[in-house]
Amino acid sequence: MSEAYLEGNLTLLHNMPFAKNLSIDGQGRYSSYNTFGSTYNWKAGINWQPTRDVAFRGTLGTSFRQPSVSELYGGTLMSYNGANDPCDMTQITSYGSRQAAVMANCMKQGINPNTFQQAGSGQVPTLNGGNSKLRPEIGRTYTFGATFTPHWVPGLSTSASFWHYRVSDTISALSTQYVLDGCYTGSSPTMCQNVTRLSSGQISTVSALNANLGALTTSGVDWDLSYRFRVSDADWFMVENNFQRLVSYKQQAIPGGEHYNYLGSITYQAQGTSNPTVRDYASLTWHHNNFSVTYMMQYISGMHWNDGTYTIYKSDGYGRVKTPAMVLQDLTFNYNLKRWNFQFEVQNLADKQPPFLVNAASNSNDSTYGGWYAGRSFLLQAGMNF
Image (cartoon, rainbow, N blue to C red):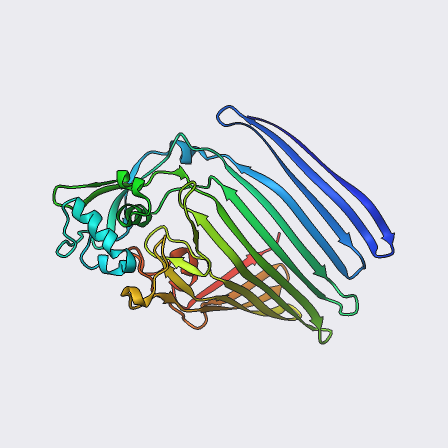
């Protein structure tokens, strides 16, 4: 691999009326690979500060990610992923308007969904591994934002940004449930070539190797606030908040396929993803000389359940179809004694448990609710500065 990189910055106006600063910057990178050929990526930005208190910024750029060695050449492994056989007598009733198509496709393979029961307790043997034919991911990004730091309110800073990402040829493996649903609902008939069954009708394997999937398009708004104020010679407070609002999240599972809307939904079963509409992280810290205490709160909005291709509803025969909004709270105490620092932390202050989600591995979503699993816990540590 060989690369060449160039960047520059140009100030157009400085300390002028309505332009305390106006500048543009650009970056370019040329990369040549012996496996993927060559690519050129760039980024351009503009920064405008009309007054000392307000600044605006905007960026536009492209990106490129080559597959890793493990994504390309990793060995094929058998994994028992959480998934339900569409032909199972209890699962087929959950497909709503798609049930007739599932029934017909199962019967074509000699399986009667009226009597057939899946073995494996919601787990399906799945082949995962590398793919030497992978192509790089290609992305395009633009962001716009503003920062407000009023000089008449010392210690206050707030900023807001709108961002938009689009990534093509995303590298990942299809979920086991997507392969099965695509085959038996008829939405992606080519998925059937990835499913093999035993003479008994039970699933032998589902093949879900790494692949270049379709495009991912997502956008959102972030708002940050930081305010530090002193109330006495020995005491001061810090308030910080990060608010994230997801505006859109659409993804293709296969190139040229349907764009699935995953905004505000959580995918159940193994390999699931979550896309809450709102996340918020807030903290309040009180400092008194060498002592401080910090209260931290994390909020995640509720999400609708999605099987990877379809958002489920109670009318489909499900009892639960959503996870509730969740709040996680922590409390941290710090004390500095010369070169020593002592910290005592209470994690998950309210002893919240992760919300239930259909998942053969943990009955929840590990990547989203990992901080809840241990319940209330305590941490004590000491450190020394050298």
